[in-house]
View 1: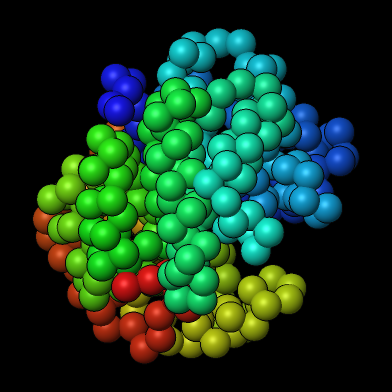
View 2: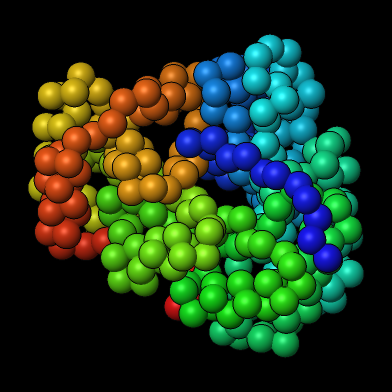
Length: 326
């Protein structure tokens, strides 16, 4: 059964998963107010796609990120209200193994948001460790669309082989996959250059969403080999990668200076130039303003070629998501 609903996605979205501890814990009212200001600024400037997940900001697995995003959506009063597009991802939890569990999960997300989900996505594939579970969850994902609960369905962290298989499975039910979300940036070109996912998506009419387009902040130019570094695993990763990405950062800086832009804006614009929808995170108004500055202009072919070459020459790449399939 094909349901005639149109899902319109803007050029750039804002990934709530990357809004840091404000969404992870999010119980401080002042932090919530700051995030409301970030949301307001994004929407008023035409950035109306917001991506989250039912496993984000959970702490006790209670969907805190979705709750906050719903509050921000209801609290916004201004232009582009009708264009707000809420995308969420449903986790393949080990206890979520029936098709009905996916339908129930989508309804629970909608309840936390206080509105219908526009785009619902399978957060990751279980094909490598529980293929029997994935089949049921995918059936549930298609059920969600057929029941008219969402305007579109998508996948996340799927490679071309799995993507084509799921596309065929859904096509037999008249369900179109709208989006595929993968880690993609100048430090993570693997999904496009090695897996050739963009070509496959173009052939299948699927829009490619690029998460972590700033490589967790490595492409912002705010960090050096001498530190200081973020805490935890992120800091360890930065220590490993920064010594080998100097040429790329230098190229980014050169392009940014010639354009009177920031390195972040160039990195995000590069993703857009590749035909993807980047979803950079923002936890402050200043960060949101910087992200918005990536819109309204285009890198030229020479700049793109220089950045491509610099990305190819780096010694180390960003670690791939462990759930990314081939």
